[in-house]
Length: 152
Image 1 (cartoon, helix red, strand yellow):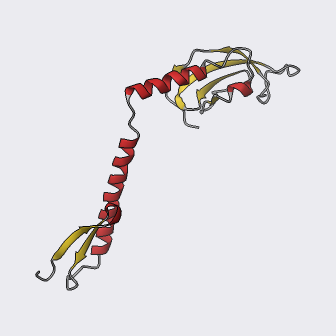
Image 2 (cartoon, rainbow, N blue to C red; image 1 turned 180 degrees about the vertical axis):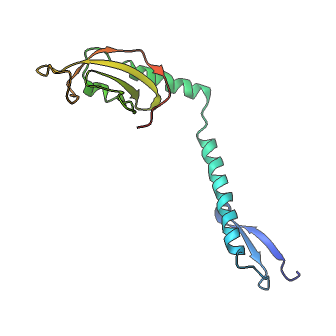
């Protein structure tokens, strides 16, 4: 082979491509940095493609997840405590989304699924102000709905 040519390429372990470059090949000082950037880009692209393929699910799988989620959401009923609610939901982000006696809560498995909840103060704690209490009782809960998540 002539000076400055690539002698060949071979496929190494785990799909990494290694190039054997002639020892008399004149490399610029930036060649290694440029090659490193190209390899990082290619590896990132491959990883992103694999991740995208792995996360795809069938319509039946999505439907199954949604059905199971609704079953779990519907376990929360009027008369339960805030503590029981917090096993399935978490408070929605954003300013003023919650007070002690009223709030918006998001499903733990999807920030897009929400419910509006009203509480009655726990026994012996008649004040409607002050900190939330895990013993506050649900007096009203909306049907689940879909809305954009709020940043925390």
